[in-house]
Image (cartoon, rainbow, N blue to C red; front, top):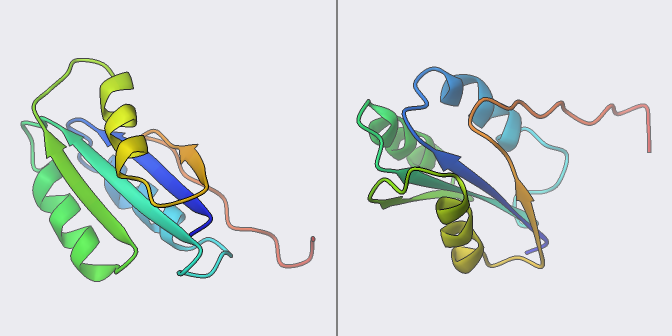
Amino acid sequence: MKVSVVLPVFNAGDHLDRCAPSLLEQSMGPDTYEVIYINDGSTDDSEQRLARLTEQDPHARYLTQPNSGWPGKPRNVGIAASKAEDIQFVDQDDELAPRDPDTT
């Protein structure tokens, strides 16, 4: 495993519908990276959304913790759960652009 993408989630709502596909549609092969969502005590439907997302993708998983009130704690939980050599942090309202196939 080369990269773990760690994403803290708190009441993300529709942001997950935009962010998650951008993480899963990268040019790296599925055996080279994982996506770790850390639900930081969300009170909306974020946990249900994460359950659906991770059921659909074998290299994505989520962990749940009580609300910490800041993004550092869930990031640290994600680092501890990582199986990869490198870590990439992404926020719940981020979208990663796909690699342009015409560039190297």
